[in-house]
Length: 191
Image (cartoon, rainbow, N blue to C red):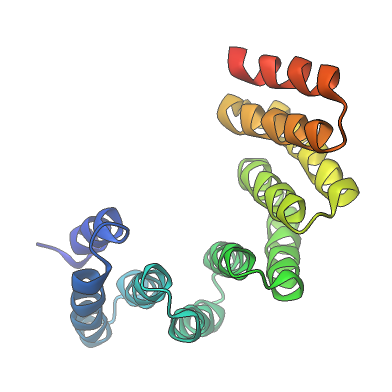
């Protein structure tokens, strides 16, 4: 099985079997470095970070994602850097670390904007909106969901468009604007 195939298999199993993925990703990392495979190396590091996330070991999770970020920076791979910043933003959000989360998301947003990648911006804006909602920053959350709607309309991504509408509906519900909440959530459901 090729290194690339192993990467795909491990990502598929990262949630359901983090212990074994962690062990296999360590082995994959050694093999990737020996073979000079950048893609397998950066993914092996991210897989270790992801496994530690599911094992609730935030320090190790952060450590491996930071290592992956260093590898991506040395390779000057902006897309991978943006993906890693997005992952770190989501991780910090899950652990309630607002400032770290928003900092990572801002870095990802800056990269995707510079690359003018509306597909990635669409999904990232939805993630940021969700994180801001969890941190009770409702006005900022609404702004990001609205930005997501624009990006999703530009690239034709109906799934994230529906997620953004749902996020807006949740915010209206939090503000006790139930009629707007129902209308927006019904629109999301139709999609």
